[in-house]
Image 1 (cartoon, rainbow, N blue to C red):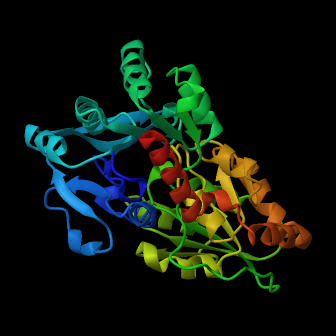
Image 2 (image 1 turned 60 degrees about the vertical axis):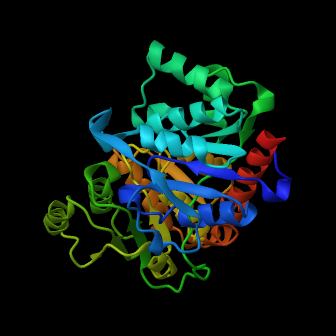
Image 3 (image 1 turned 30 degrees about the vertical axis):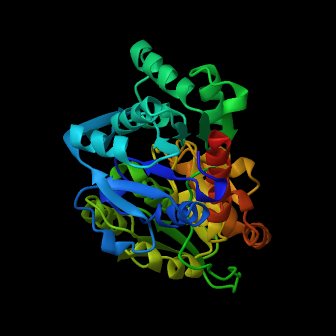
Length: 380
């Protein structure tokens, strides 16, 4: 093992976010690279390395790819099953490595952990949330494979206490090998200024993809049944997707054209301006593993209305952030949460004040510290 200041940590993942866009990973991987100057992040062959010149990306991976969809209730997570080819495995075996960081229970994670064990290298496994939130396989065989895999990892880092319970009770991870703290978060490219109540209409913000699962149609339905004689409001919709035409028609049908504005998709490094204009962020997902939208709202210093169907909701609320969670499938429950900001100026002012000091545990610096502590514990 090299000295701790020259620790060769290698992050291996089959994919990073939607379409391999590092939007949500860029700052986290930047923390990883700054803390471990000899680090490498393995990506697929042909990856556009020029997009991220500050990151130690290494195009070592090649995959056999097959489409795989997962059902979560009535919704489908669309994705691909990526299995590393022998060439990718050979590159893993040859790369100078002290600690390998693997993500979840994908074939890429299984293969890269196996190569690390063959070489007597250390393994840190990252588990972001309890798998039921995205339809992860939980049959006897799948659980047995996960138990064998996870229990051989030297350190398992999970994002929250709910996932820690899953790791202890379902996977059998011993306390001395388990670390709890988020390893993935999101925050705008720059800090928006604290929001103030200027007496104008309350500005709601939805910033996410326009697909059925993300629940904008539920938010529009809730806005349409707000009580009468409440304060004026507007809704800014930032994002795009296949549901946009249907959502625009719904706005017309509900008579909300004067209040709802669609702005389309923005690059991640430009969304700070959208948060700066907002008073309250709404994340009405009908099912998410651990959506980063809520963490981004918290780090943007805005109150946030979350969904109980989001694996992140409990974690955010327990942190003391300015957040509330409701089931968005119940329009009147969601409308009640929104009406609280419109009926009581004191409530809005109080939530804006709480939001102005977000919990430090969701910052990229805290996430970087969690990763560093897990990697150094495994190395030690």
